Length: 157
Image (cartoon, rainbow, N blue to C red):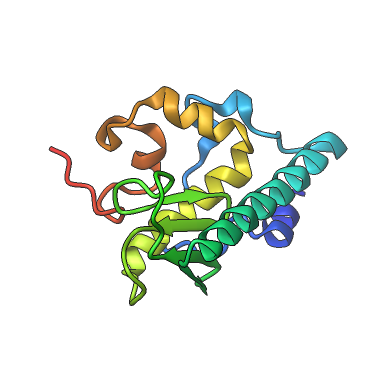
C-alpha cells in the first residue's frame, strides 16, 4: 500500500537522494500512517492540499509579476517580492518562491526544495507550525537538516 501511494502521489518524485524516513523523527505522530483506508485518505487529502496551496501561491506570485516554471516536478516562482520568499526562497506546498530573478536553478537546491514538498505532503498543514516550532535557524531546524543543509545552500558550523 505504501509503495502504491508513493507512486500515485509522487511522494518520492524528483528527489536526488534517498528520502528521509520521518517515521523515526520527532514528529512521527503527525504522519498519516502506513495501512488502512484512513491512512490512504489522509495521504490523498494532504496531496490535494499541497497542490491547492502551491497553486494559490503561484497565482499570487504571477499576479505580482513573478515568473513560475515547472522544474523537475517543483514549481519555481522567481522574482517574488514578498515576505513569503525568505532567505533564498521558501517552499509552500509544491511551489518554491524565490526573490532571485529567473534563470538556472542549482539541481542541489531543487532536490532540497523537493524534500520540503515531500514534507508538506507527509505532514500536511501541520508542517508550517512544526517548522516554526523548530526555530528559524536552519542549522538546528529538523526540516532543513532533513532536506540536506548543504544542498539548500546553508553553511553551518
